[in-house]
Image (cartoon, rainbow, N blue to C red; front, side, top):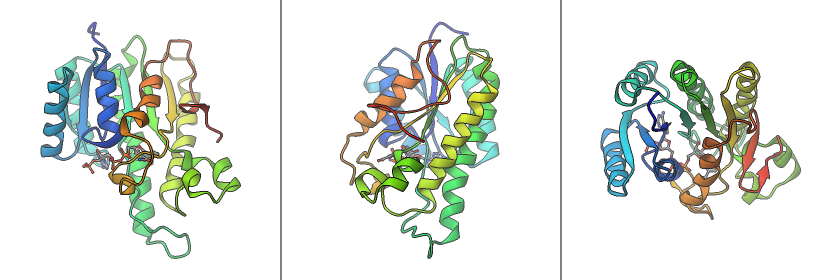
Length: 243
Ligand SMILES: NC(=O)c1ccc[n+]([C@@H]2O[C@H](COP(=O)([O-])OP(=O)(O)OC[C@H]3O[C@@H](n4cnc5c(N)ncnc54)[C@H](OP(=O)(O)O)[C@@H]3O)[C@@H](O)[C@H]2O)c1
């Protein structure tokens, strides 16, 4: 492994993912900017480099096996390994999502990207992560995936709009995170889920109340956990998020 810590952030061309890349880059890390659109990716890489970050572009569509395999090869060739993976890319699947009237395509899209995409990318990169001295995986989840919060409240600020695709896809992702932590419990890999709060981004038509930089902070914290840090947990800035 090289001396420099290497990270890859999926969906890093904008929003919270971009700020996670900026935050990790500010630590002096080399950061792969995973993004599916060439122009948006290159613009983000240029902006990060202008800010002094050792950023490199990684063409990456998390729903596409071929794209993910090529991304793994690129990371290995460009960086020589990987220490930290932030699975940030996510979609709502399209709104509205009232359970009784939902377009099933929205459910499929949300699960394909937010859950299967994370499993696909994680498994493809695990051989590189296993070679790291302190591998970390951060799955960008959401408090709307908390069944405790969902079942206790009709407050949209806490639980988001009714959604039978997006919110349950994050519940699914949380469960997936726990399963990985169990399988990897005897390794040095720490894997956790993060909630960024309600952040003003494209995802919600910029209705969020936090900045992308604020939303990125919890992912940066979980990406930089000490070796005796938690695994299989779900965290926001204020601490543990209830399942
Ligand atoms: N905003 C919030 O309030 C909030 C709250 C809780 C959790 N989150 C989570 O935070 C993460 C980032 O969201 P955001 O708010 O920053 O939204 P955003 O601004 O819409 O950014 C989403 C990112 O994911 C990328 N992406 C989507 N599908 C992809 C795919 N198939 N392959 C690769 N990249 C893909 C997008 O790329 P394109 O530009 O190509 O579309 C974009 O870079 C998501 O997982 C979201 O669920 C957000």
